[in-house]
Image (cartoon, rainbow over all chains, first blue to last red; front, side):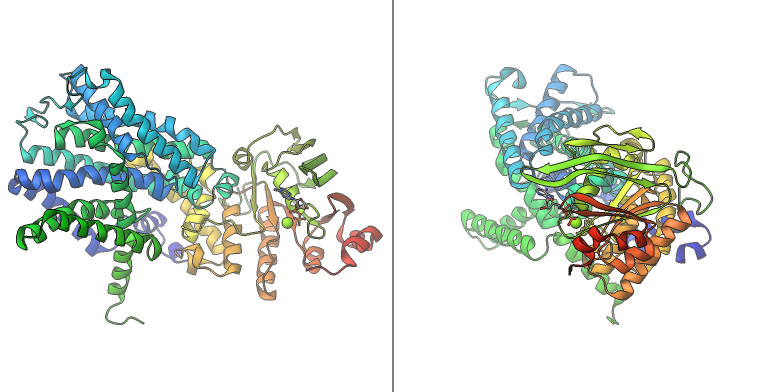
Length: 358
Length: 273
Ligand SMILES: Nc1ncnc2c1ncn2[C@@H]1O[C@H](COP(=O)(O)OP(=O)(O)O)[C@@H](O)[C@H]1O
Ligand SMILES: [Mg+2]
């Protein structure tokens, strides 16, 4: 009735389903965005670039990807590291095969190649679920790492078996290689993260997102209301792998500059991204970003505080960090499966009512 | 087209009231050694409320599962809209215009009431992934168009107050109502309801009966209804088919079925839950 009385249907529903229905949130979001695009590039230095911003943005993209697959579509994956490797090696092969190609299409194409591989490894999800699917993706993880080690074509027969990013430019600015400036790589990654966080938000709020969530919540009922399980699961694998592939490409080309597959894209990486979405919040775009920020910033903070300021030995600080992450994972899995994002939402709801909670 | 323009537009290939909409012919279904359905035939006519009754384990739910393609019978045929139906997958059958609710509620627990009912519109939403990613423009327009239909269903079922509530937190009776809403959102030609009133109190049953009658009369939706409460069945249905141990033992208008001795012996006479 409320909507009818509003007279103009479109404005009401549009406002009702807006990303930031509350004015304060909207202003806050755009202020942060403006700050990130317009102010940070002038302040950033090598340390902040390589230790904080680039890894955050790379892992935020990967976390968005895994959250689409696991948090929204309910398909558990332990293959994130392997899919990042696909993105990285696709990027390397494209950079070396087409030296004149702009980095923007290269990152896109790396994502597209990974999406195709993701669809292939997503096929078993039609028959197996839960724990067994997790094991199948684990097999994909080990297979992919093995493959990139084993077939020299992937690393252009280099003697070390490593891949190294040559210098490439966008609009005349170097984004990869030694000459790339912190502000350039930062803006390049930020543009990708901004656009694709927005795209993820759009995908999950409409038809496709609801099909994913229907499959996640009850696959049989989803099928009976007309959701094609094959198409839906594979689309989640494709989109998820696209994001993770782009993350892998940026990880290799912009952040590390060089990579050795076992070290860079091992099973640790898969767990790292999984922890991000558990701590940040399963099935939440905001949670993916928060989780990535948390997992990237935590070691930086520990190193600066405990090792730097208190003078603790490095290994002690690392153990403490591991224990904290482990504790948080258990806490969130048991108490709040929707992670920090849900805690944040509850706090906001309380704030909205404050100071009259009843 | 019920909720698009109530009472005016009729589904183009829906046929006339009284035509046979769906015919089950000699269908048998077994699970290993268990014969759930044995050589059953009956039809469902356009615009009627067809009750399917019988004691627990009679094969009623299995029958609905055959109709919506969840099970494929070992023998027999299904005719829908005058055509023999091929062995289709459940999601294809949903696209052909058959929707249902479940005996044990099968809502999407992680979503709100609104989103659950919106999933009923999924087969009608066509904008591809590219437009979805952009959102502004075609995808958003499509979303709003379907939201309007869903809001009418929400009004119809009187669940405006729980629009944004996660369905996991709703009481049982309201969950059943949301599930009906999701099925209605598909604007089906044939609506299958598996014990929609089981476990409800008298007041909730009355509400649900009213919704079922309104759906049938206002929108002309054909309904197949499984129900244990004989009073409800007698009130609501145009014709009743009675199953027992997987066999059909009665078929006809409610009062005729009530006088049928086989039915009395098998079902009406004995205590049931
Ligand atoms: N998936 C299944 N596997 C094995 N047996 C089943 C299955 N579904 C139903 N049955 C059996 O088929 C018979 C009919 O069940 P059902 O159709 O659920 O009865 P009703 O809905 O009339 O209570 C029962 O004996 C039941 O045990
Ligand atoms: Mg049953």
